[in-house]
Image (cartoon, rainbow, N blue to C red; front, side):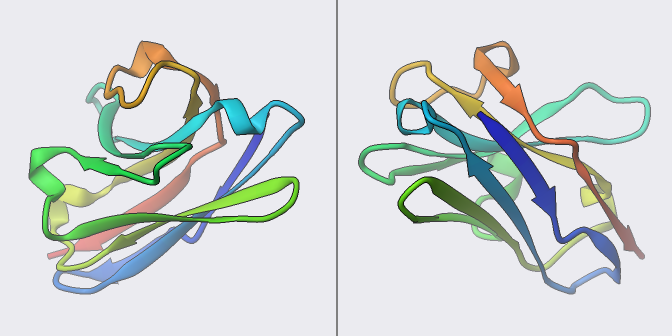
Length: 125
């Protein structure tokens, strides 16, 4: 499974941004996809997850109502989006997309096998 994240940038607080993650690979259908983030000096933390079969989404409490995960399935690829609204300075981080084969939903970073390279989001206050 290969993951390529994009869409990061610099913006002011209150703004919106949409991140994209292009996922590909022969075994991709066996994986759900999620977004994590890592701020400077902090551990990587879960942001959102979308189930591979039913499309059900789960979010970290600190992004509920502001961030929305979605996916578009193609023949051999999946693109996962993370729309981020009402951005705050504390949302500043490198955002990573990742793939997990673990059950219906997991927020555990250790359950994610494949990772994209990350895309930087900087929100100025």
